[in-house]
Length: 335
Image 1 (spheres, rainbow, N blue to C red):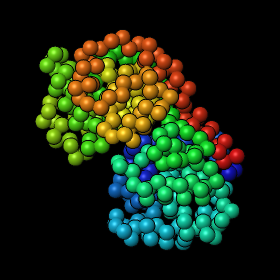
Image 2 (spheres, one colour; image 1 turned 180 degrees about the vertical axis):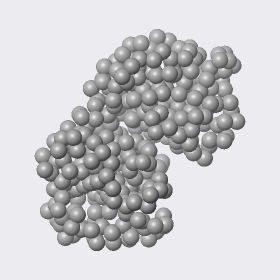
Image 3 (tube, rainbow, N blue to C red; image 1 turned 135 degrees about the vertical axis):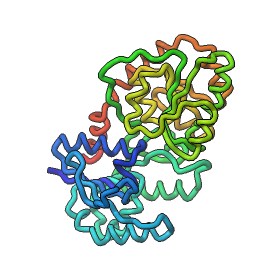
Image 4 (cartoon, helix red, strand yellow; image 1 turned 60 degrees about the horizontal axis):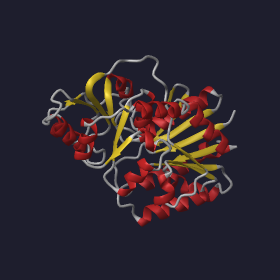
């Protein structure tokens, strides 16, 4: 039985694209007979103050990192060094963005099999330092995965494989409410929520009954409520709600895939050139609406044309993007 160690800054019960990605891949690997261990930072959601436990057969070890300050990385390195036997006894080490955690052990285990998955991007504009770090970590990894082909352009990456995530197809069909949209994501400056809300204001001048329901939390929550938007708050199973709405206002890979699996038209927002590439350098770019301004989105919705062919093409592609298939990419990488 092969022993796999995943290193990740965050993990379940924290919710996000990276967390869900690792959770699902670990789940499939465990079912296939692998022994999977997740090493991650301690979480505010770790209410039991338990630093070593199992979730669905996956061992989770949390590093008590302390305060989020400049010294945190040294505390992580110290923990990694003190627990180097865990690394030594494993067959595969796979880093999810945090290859720098492994740096102290790279010196004493130069022949260890170490792999890296790069998820998303840090910020815009992308700093030269971020590009250099990724190139160094790519060089030090046996092989790499990039979540999104845009990294070739913006980080000059040369990945072994490019993936976009996986989905579970809905078990039943639900008729959507007419003139309704759902937003899933964090309510902050980087998810486009303000643009979506602004567009709703314009749309309602022509379609007064149009509604936007938001599943998420964040610093803009109160501001959005004042705009007459329905805010449901954080829901770990928000993807199950997508079928209830006619349109999906989502701009992150996993959410987009889940909306396509639910056969809903996706409207994805970008506000900088990196995010534009993030969306337009995908295999499904022609089957979703990619836009920049609220006026652009409102015009598309108000002059809605037949989207059935786009929806069907998107579904035809996404139905094959299972978590089993994503896991196959990892296993083939390690072999």
